[in-house]
Every structure is written in structure tokens, then in C-alpha cells.
Image (cartoon, rainbow, N blue to C red; front, side):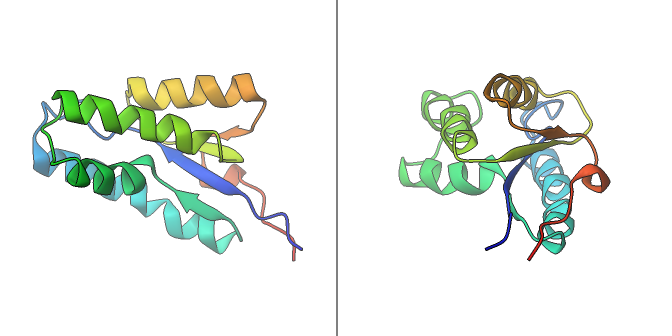
Length: 123
């Protein structure tokens, strides 16, 4: 059995985009760029939007700030965070990511600010 962790990657997604879909996609790509290095360390990377966006589509979609969007996006991340073993906080202003860090610290789970800080899982 290994000590593989599920690590939530937290950082700007909607913040600073003015709700521009292209800028949000660029932010998601930045979050996703951290996934492979985490995987290569023997862990399971997770991004809240990976879980929330399909749920939002199932709810009929919704623009950022709409009732459907607000009903799904942050609550999905909070539920997911309850199952994660750590958080990687990427740079950039983000109220949601800052809240993820606050919750993680309150739960006593590690928060890292660089992929290099994350220890490798042992086999």
C-alpha cells in the first residue's frame, strides 16, 4: 500500500477574468499544468472545476454568477475538499482558492505552494 494522496489544485479560475470564457479557459489550463507533476509524484491530482463543470452542464448550464453557477461551483469544491488529503495553492488572487486553503488548514491537512514541496508517495 502506498501513501498516495488526493491533492486539490487551487488557484484562480474565474478571478480576474471579467467572466471572459477564454481567460477562464487559460486559468483552467494553468491549474491543469500542475496535474501531471503531482501524478508523477505518485498522487492523484484533482481540480474542483473537473468535478463541477459536468454537474453544471447537467443542471442546464449557467453563466458565471448565475444562480445555477453559484449553486454548483463552490459547493462542489467544498465537498471535494472534504475528501482531499492536501492542497496545492497556485499563485494569483482567488477568493475561492483562499477559502480552500483556509478550510484545509482548519482540517489540519497540508497546504503546499509549489509542486516541489509535495513529497513523493512511497510504494
